[in-house]
Image (cartoon, helix red, strand yellow):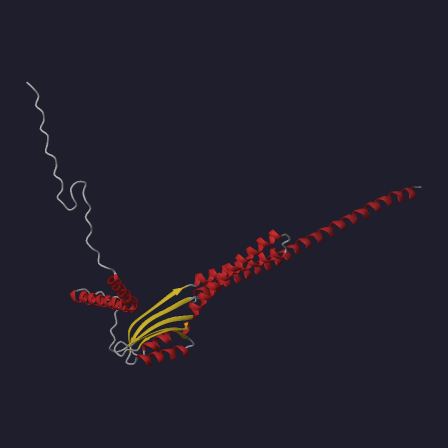
Length: 330
């Protein structure tokens, strides 16, 4: 009996001890896994943070490089849109030969002749040429033209149209997008009113786009081809500069005489233009008027009209004598 009671008491104690051992093992396992997780998680997070920081630095570096690249491109002269215009005057011995040489130099540089005006008089021989040459050959052509004779005047002007060109590009891109959106709406139109309205809108937007594109082509032409206006004058030609501000009696006399000759020339020109009409029309009219006057009989003396009293042609009747006034009695 005592052995059975001892076994009954030993079994629960053993069970309680086994449960305690299992609980302690489970707690130790959980604590170990939690520590490992806590150690692993910071490592992973640190790797992710490091990768993100590296990507952020790389992106910042790319943005900085792009910004620096764009700034460098904007500062470069060859990336800007510049219009070059040159005006010069050269005195040469042979104007015709100098003009031919200038045209040949312009064509060799890849340009062409935009205008040609010449005066062949020996004393005042003069040739004015307008040359269009590529912008990168502008300076070389100018120097070559100056070497054809004695350069008397040179003026070079530049106009930077970079901002206008960039603005036109942006406006053209925006206008094209507007045209495309209007065309899409036109394709989905269902009523006649919508169709007519959208067609008018598409036409207006296309016209604005064509105007912007024409301005862009004009700017592109002016920046791609520079303009040179060169004037060749003979050795004896007299030139008048814009800065010539001489004063004095002789200058005024010369100007007045020149104005008188110009006025006389105009008057003679008008007289020469009117004279044929006067001969063809005026002479017959004058002859007809003279003949008409000869055929008309001369008019006689006008008859005299008789007065109210007295014969015709006699003296006028005299007035009756006045009647004396009657005297009153005393």
